[in-house]
Length: 286
Image (cartoon, rainbow, N blue to C red; front, side, top):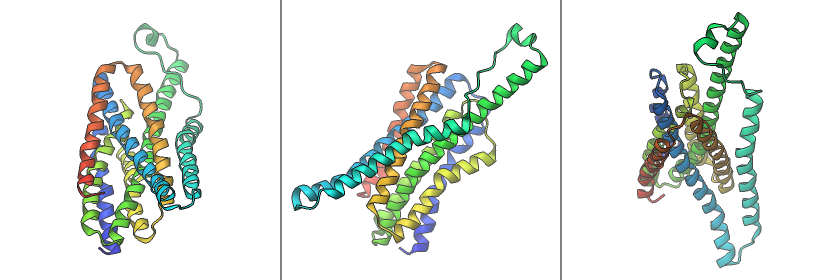
């Protein structure tokens, strides 16, 4: 498989994330529907967290086995664990810090309905509109953070595609592309699920798709040219930390809306969807 073919197939695998994004343009959803969609996306993200954790540990365990069985140095294990730790903490804390600085002071939810709304002054009405706009901006920022976290994960997936293609394992590379394409199609729900009642523009959805799916394309090109377990581990660690942070944000929002039992069932459904799409990759021997 040539570099051009690998690049093209990596782009196809990454572009399928756009399949799930248009659901955010549907008419206003009920509270139950918002909870269900949010928790379905959280389930997909929970699987991705498990997936990136297993991949990252697998890289370290290879060097640990070499130390245990072949008498190799322990320093690569220590160095990779330090890299994993730094990446994971940066994914959790770094994204939280960046979002706090972008969002500034959390807006106070506006008053709702009835006589209170009827007696509001013009100034209070303007403040309420400003609060709604701030809440919408925060929701869109959260969605873009999710897209970035998924993008980190997809870059590592793209590396796997590129490495397999460069090694001449055409069958494995093809199965990886099909499997990752299915994965990316479900990840679109993970981006738009937590938006709730916010209806993003097509421009925002296009940007979110590029942020989340584009790294698959870039990773395939890098993986074809460079083989670096340390680079893969770093992106797995960053993705794992970011995904864990995002799951916490989704759960905090859902608890305020209620319908917890429904949400937990759909969390399980989302997790199972992730496993089902991953079986295609496992079938190829990855």
